Amino acid sequence: MQKLSCSFIALLILTVTLTASAVTTVSITPATIELPEIGQQLEVQVKISDGRGIAGYQLTLIYDQAILEHIDIKVGDYLPPEPFLVPPVSSPGSVMVGAVAISGVAKKTDGILALATFKVLIKKDSTIQLSEVRLSNREAKAIPATIKNGNVLRDRGLATPLGLETKDITLDKGNLGNTVLEPLDKPANFDNAAKVSIEPAKIGLPEIGQQVQVRIKITNGRNVAGYQLKLAYDKTVLEYINIKNGDYLPEDFAKVFDVEPVISSGSVLYGAAAIGNTSKIADGTLATVTFRVLARKDSAIRLSDVLLSDGNAQEIEITTQGGRVTEEVANRRPVITERTDGGKSLHVNTIVTTNGFPVTALTSIYQNQNGIIVKAGMLIEYQVKFSELSVLKSGGVYVHTADGIVLQPSAKGQGMRHQKAPISRWSHQQIELAPIVNKRIVAITVGSKVESAPKGLFSMLVDNIQLTDGNTIITPIWLSVDRSTEKINNNIYGKLVGVDRLNLGIANDEVAVYPQGKVLTSWGRIKSDP
Image 1 (cartoon, rainbow, N blue to C red):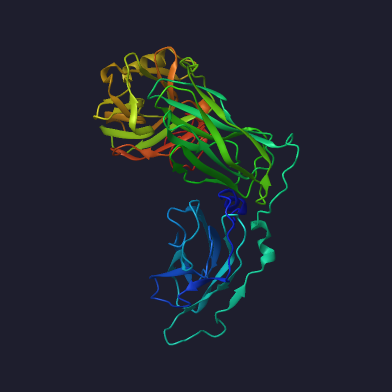
Image 2 (image 1 turned 90 degrees about the vertical axis):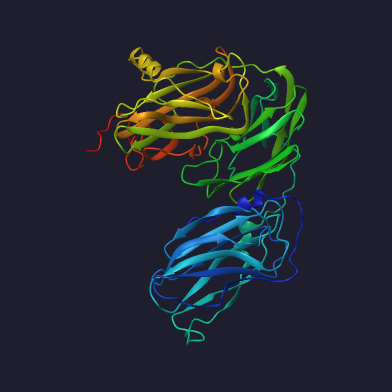
């Protein structure tokens, strides 16, 4: 069973010393649980009492899987609002859950840590036990506690089942060693310290209203399991849009969890951790941050509260370097007009369910109510490629304005370009934005929207989606060279029509051309289902 990395709690802290003056108790409530009828559900609460300075917890519930079937487990109301929840990890007969508050500590001593729901399989006496209970304050120091298990009774007539009496168990502090973040003496020499910096160090601003992206880079990192950082900027120059985890933390066999950013006026606090793993590379991108330009004047972007942690929650020494924003015009990249086979791209696929009926299957890759104001001469450019087995070869990128106008690709243009490119099936596309000059683009989607489609597979790769002036990139929307390691959210735009479902991901030319996710085959080389 995968355990919550203690380093994750260690990352998401502010330096405040808190102590517990009384012994905290974590217990199953009710202590004696009468089973309802077979097939019915019962709810169990994990409560805390006499808790002080609690910023995070981890616990495991152990139950008899022959008697109960786990349905759900949720975070309770004890921690401050909107805590970060580590997705529950279920194994036969047990379920682990954890949560961390990054906005403070619990303001009350008693409350509900978690609520678990089970379904009754048979009527038989048993216990629900607490295991691996860990409480932590904002300095990631372990808080000792006692635990009280619960009894599950098949009949109301029994006060306590034989041999299943509740026990108070004092947790062994020796087993909590990994949850303690011991202070380290600062070395006099930082030559071997990891370096966290903003790149580019000198950021040329695009036009007002356009977006600019900066990267938080790490060099000389070793065995990094997680990080926390705070980015401060001039709010009169830049407007924060989003921050995303980069490609540095490993996702080979572990899961990387990032925390919902904490946004303040002119700053953003963010963190992420690899559960059960550490980075295998020294250099990479911790995070990428996107801003919108509000004014063209010189300012600074500063890094603060930067913490790196290893797999044992030990702090890693670092140096930091901020960035400088200048009103000088940013160097723009030329428009990308060619795409060779291979490499990673956006992959869109679905199944058209009915022959000859309309299809609408769009998922957003850019969506913002403030949007992009279109100026004369602007274009959307991209490359698209359809699987040989795709029965529908019409689709690509769609542009949506605030007042409901939708600009879409030309199917005729796609077909002509395919005929001219016999070696690579990638075709370069342009969408003229002249019809929406001075209007606001609020969404850019990928997929297909047609009046009639044949039944079967729709499978398409899309790459290098750019807002351009025809020669240079004004705003990159999705370029694989920049974003191929990012997580992609499958945000359906509008209502799906005529399809079973719609899937969006990042894939090489080696893709699962049917969306069930069961078979991986070469792009366009499998036979259709009969």
